[in-house]
Length: 210
Image 1 (tube, rainbow, N blue to C red):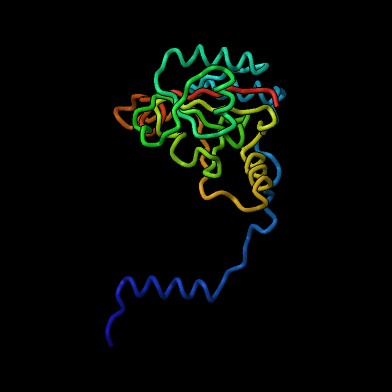
Image 2 (cartoon, rainbow, N blue to C red; image 1 turned 60 degrees about the horizontal axis):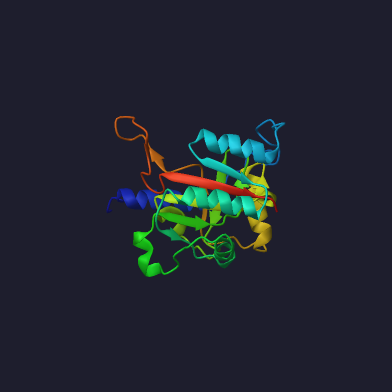
């Protein structure tokens, strides 16, 4: 009789495992209680602290006038602003800020401006999906990424932000969800921190009142 190969042995074990299922030992595990103590800080303050701790730049804007002034001041340091989202384009136009939207020139841009789905206060993270007009590329392509967010997009934990997205899209999650915590970084080479390794080397969040 021909001896079974290693591959056949593995497949046989998988088939047996599927036929003879074992009892699930963790049926009563608690998946709802928070692992972390809730912060006494406001979500906006907690996000700003956590985001700044990972080299993100947080800018609060009390109104549209402040937003325009703060953004103009920041963009004076850079060249080539790219934006695809109509609502943000309107904000830029109201503030007298020029921008590019022709995707043929995407390689030339220095700054991308996008919206987000949520801000996660405890970790200082930004949740972005492919469902926005910015799509998949814009949040990671340019060396500088600016996120426009609102106070009603702040959530204490990741699970709260994910539930918000689930509710927003009626239970159907977008094809891509990305949770970004500060600028792209790596310490793979001689344990030296390098920013901008696999994406933007600078990241800003402009927070507006909803």
